[in-house]
Length: 188
Ligand SMILES: [Zn+2]
Image 1 (cartoon, rainbow, N blue to C red):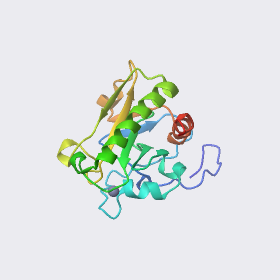
Image 2: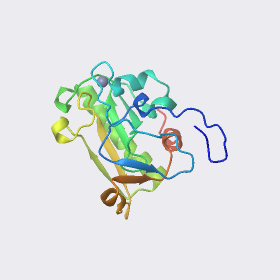
Image 3: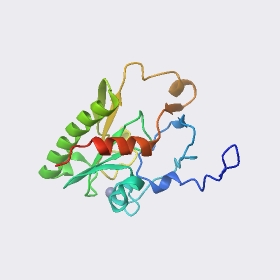
Image 4: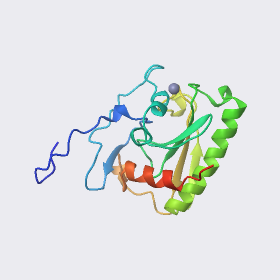
């Protein structure tokens, strides 16, 4: 892959190598050098290839992990609704909230609270959408492995793009956002 002036940018990494919850939108990555050329929307991991089981085995940078807890971890969604869209996942491969242990439920809750504070501090967001899609029929992209979405919201962050073009504008690169959130995450 080459830049407009012929500079070799190396090979684009396939999106299927990263943890992700695909949706129906394409992304228009507005920063100048885009790392993700084509999202593999066909991705449908089985238990073996579960992206949320693979993620903790990779480096934080590769897996977009911002914090590793005892029972659960926090990572950026590769298919963000907004910049800073985080996912909180238990390490265990369980599908639904009622299958989580008391320890997992408690840590998913406390990590969600911390994520809200860190996102407010780093991004100045005005609100959040927080929740879990349980089952594919309910919209879960990776239905086999429980994950809680934390989507920061700003006044006026909705525009016409998703409606007229099936495309969302995401103004910052994931690696940059990951580094900023990870640095702001409180150390124990
Ligand atoms: Zn899994």
